[in-house]
Image (cartoon, rainbow, N blue to C red; front, side, top):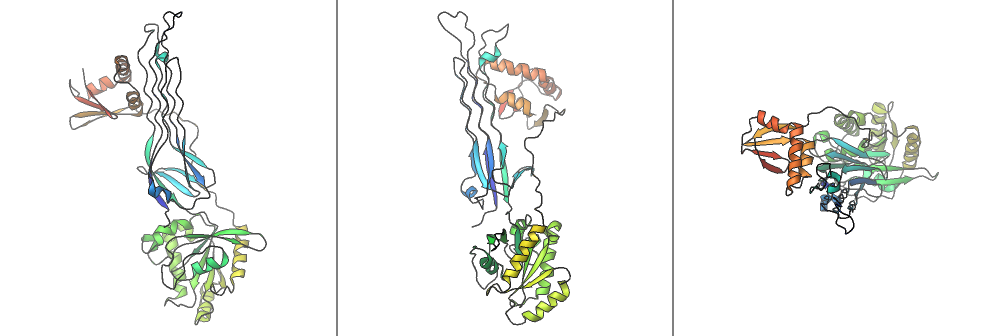
Length: 422
């Protein structure tokens, strides 16, 4: 099967915990805090690989997690950072946040990378918290949790030329004649149920990649037939070869077929409808083909180049592919918008937190406070006292009081619940 869509869960590695340790050596009186920092968690990275053609690997594994950082140790030993997790995807993969629909990257070139889930930073050891008033702190930070999200992956094949046309028009036979591709061929509609790629090599050492797109029918842009699933693969092509059953062997009119298919392309995406096309008038060696070829020339000959061919016998294919190779030299590759994931940092004034009341529980939301809570070791009294000071400085205490919180109410921050104390 050909898989061009996938949904996966990714999570950056958690940071390692900071260490609480004291320096105790015979000739070092009042040695002080000596706890090391935790290591940072690894990132989850998607890397484009031109050797891959489908997203089939994500059918069997959908959850990916990078290594976490090691915990800090005594003697001020810092934990080792976790390794990054690199996931290979086919070149031509669009990466979106599954919940928001935001496009994170368009991986179009071999080796291109994007970080989709960053690892958490390591927690600081108690050596960082020594002050003039507290020279032996017994608190340290836990590691920051790594980012996590669901991703939507969508593959758009990278091909120079797309073969389009109604089912059984002869697209698969044509690509099998001009390249080494070997698609399934039979005399019934929808033989091709997945895109096929082939490389056409000419005697003058020129070459181009052609994609055989499963047959389109009327209503394809709205999901009828197979067209809705595979129309996206035409978007990156520079030129279209419109294959027509000139003999009308399936009881259809090739003149109408040409009009219907182009209308479906335009309804799906107006940009595709404006792509350059040449017409491959296929099955020219069958009955009624000559009459229909004349009609095609009368209706479209002034706008499109028409090549009478027989995909079965190979007649006329050389003229077609050499003309296509020449046209491709005149059509520059379309620039693909690449999402910049490492741009300059822009600081904007944002609300630090929000408070909502849900079913007897006050929910405090905000990245800053949620990170502080997640990195606080709630089993250490000094750590809890530090968190209380942070919440007070941020104004969360007074904001909860203004929101109507009373003694004993439940306050939820991230994954943790607390009892409100006035």
